[in-house]
Amino acid sequence: MQGRIDAVLFDLDGTLIDSAPDLGAAADQMRTERGLPSLPLERYRPMAGAGARGMLGVAFGLTPEAPEFAALREEFFVNYESRMLRNTQVFDGVAELVEALRARGLQWGVVTNKSVRFTAPLTRAMPLFETARAIVSGDTTPYAKPHPEPLFEAARRLGVAPVHCVYVGDDERDIMAGRAAGMRTVAATYGYMGEQAEVARWEADAAISSPMALLQLLKQA
Image (cartoon, rainbow, N blue to C red; front, side, top):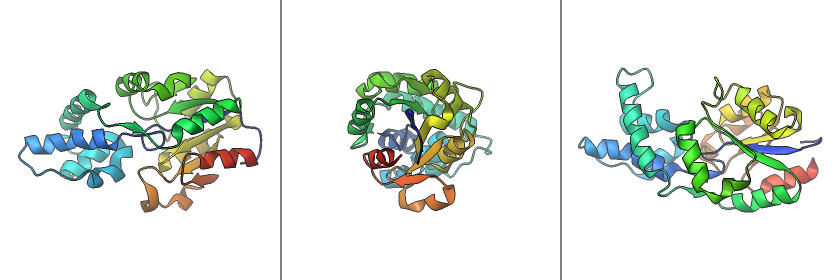
């Protein structure tokens, strides 16, 4: 983590916000409407970072290759859109981290694979994101993570060279994208993957078990 750092970029779901309750409820509604028993949130939470793919996988055992996947995905999107701010919350320590970054003169932003259909209303409604200088969604560029282009786009919006950025995420795709973009990478193990993930295999530059732990890393840089 040595070297100049001018900006910190974050993944969204599982890194800054806990949206698992609303994602899981959107998928579980589809089960109950079909006469299937409800599943506990604990079943959905580990796969929340995978969005519709993860939620439909838990709810129905489906993969994107299934012929009915596209139709069920849109049904899931409609359900989620109607409730995505009901129980979604900022992770403990994130607001304090953002304020500390700003106090150090660092810019910050978001790079997520969530489509702008959801990212835009969600970030507009949550006060945390008022000071974010860049919010890049999964369909902002022609590519999604693990491709580095969304991270390059965020760096361009911030006016910061990628080499002077840190990217923080809770999924292996986040670390792959950050490394490909030439950014320093931090794995957030407090997110959805947690202990189930083989974080060491991701080859991130560092890992943190709480949001505020990032500050100690930055002090060492």
